Structure formats: structure tokens, C-alpha cells
Image 1 (cartoon, rainbow, N blue to C red):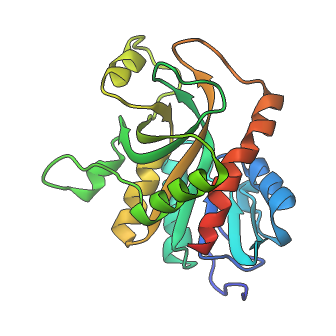
Image 2 (cartoon, one colour; image 1 turned 90 degrees about the vertical axis):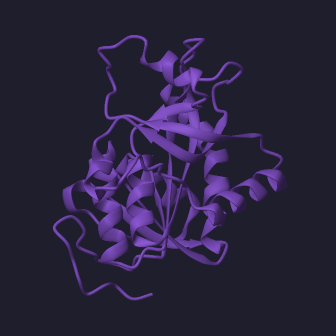
Length: 239
């Protein structure tokens, strides 16, 4: 792969960028993924400390880059990765809070769709309510990986919320009643951005908090639990 000759206000490549890009929220987590899982990893971006790296996993080229928090941040980076640098598969990897009874810490959620309380979708001026949806190709491949690895996963709708500290204290219960599996802050924007561009996107999450029980993972536990999610996400570079 060659280093791109173009740049944007947010990505100034100093190395190659693969067609498959994993996107954790934390840029330091991107660095951890590159150092832990990728061979011959090189850093390609440091603008605004939003670190990006490219290497290989089982012989397939893959990049990993921080997305920041929230729909505005991930959609900005996803748009530039797609339209300026040729990304074809974008996979959000991160943590979420689990809603449904019976969920436990470190369960894996794969988001087939993403509800949202954001106004991000208004820009498309569609004649109805758009439902941001994951790529079936990536979703089906992840399901097959989970079967091969004998990993139980929850598949369904998640909530991408703009609000971390919500003034309304019954919001989580209302989404739970509608069967939503959990809450994070990015995937609806990622799915819509990818859909408009005709590329593939998927969100895979580790449950770090369980709303009903109040269970919360420590920072050390989150680090260890990250492994299972990554071993489902990284093989998508071969799809």
C-alpha cells in the first residue's frame, strides 16, 4: 500500500490507509490495538491526537483509528476515510451499557441497527423516519466468527445517544421496553454515513455497564475483556 497524496483538515496521512478501518472511540485504544494485534503497524495520522495505524492481521491489511466520542466526531472521520482515502469497511469497536435483563458484564453486542435521539439524520431530508442499519455482509461474517470461536453474542437494535448524563431519569427504561439491547454514542451516524456512500459498516460492543443491576467494569477489567471483541472484529478485514 502507498501513502495517500491527499489530506483533509483532520487526517494528514504519513502512511498507508487500508480499506478496512476499525474505529474505537479512544485514540489510545487504537494505539493499543495496533501494538497488540497488527503486524508491521505504522502510524498514519496524529492530527488533533486522533491516532491512526495500519498493519496486517493474518495477512490482510487493516487500519485502526480513533473516532472520538459522539455522532458528530465519528461521522466526520468516517466521511473523510470513505470519500478521501477509499475506506470500504468501517467497524466500530467499543463499550456500551447493556439494557436487557440477563445481560452480564463483558457480553458482546452486535448492532444490526441503531436507533438515535440525534438530529444527525435530518440532513438527508428523507420523507419519513430512516432506520440506520448495519451491513449484512459484515454482520453475517461476525455471526459466523462467533460460532467458530464459540462466543455467545447478542444481535439487535442499539441506541446511539447524544446524551451521556440525561436529565430524564426514565429514558433507559423506555428504550428497554422497545427491545433495545444497549446504549452507546456513535453507530447511527456511522451507519448512515456508510449507507449514503454505499460502503459497509458494523458496530461490535463489549458490555461495560449493566443498567438494571448497576454492575460496572473497572478500567483493568475493560482492558482484559477487549480481547474477545477484537477477535471477532479483526477477521472482517478478510471479508
